[in-house]
Length: 110
Image (tube, rainbow, N blue to C red; front, side):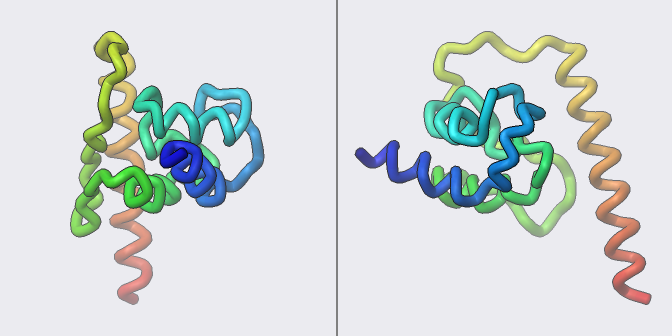
């Protein structure tokens, strides 16, 4: 029952567009995968910021003081490690996101 509540809370934190960019058919499947440890809380491509709220729901602490990519500590559920090419692509995307956030922060300070 506890998992169903978390799935519902995660679903409510998502944009509910069912776009599939996270790798799942719909937001409900993504929410279930996060609770089961099969997906990162930051997997929503439509609203990556929802990952912070989702991390709170599942009890994963993510530092908010830095824009550096900090992968959430989620149980692996017996899945093999990510391929090297995917890890490198994620690092590159993370750096791009960091650069954009720094630019936004500089614009806000003007």
